[in-house]
Image (cartoon, rainbow, N blue to C red; front, side):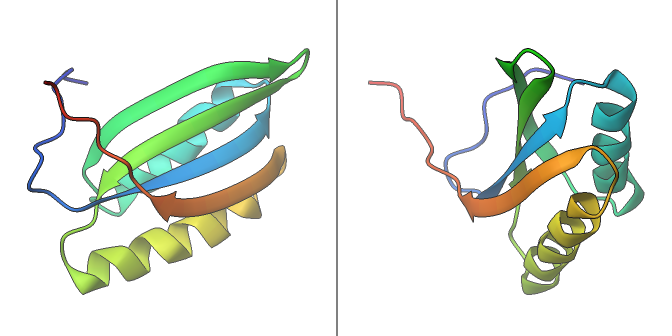
Length: 97
């Protein structure tokens, strides 16, 4: 995965997952994005508790059909065993001064 800052003119949505600490589950969630051809701009994870981690995925959401695909993807990921919570929110892009 190339590390590059998201372009400021691209619309993006951020999906936030609270999942059991499991690398396989993390890969399955990211695989859902790849299977649907969704451009992942950024993915961050952190430990939230002893056996729980949070995953934040920022995805490009330019076309209306992509926005719908992201909504369905969050619902699909929420149904996976080991996913405690899944939500979607608009991405807040930080601009360098």
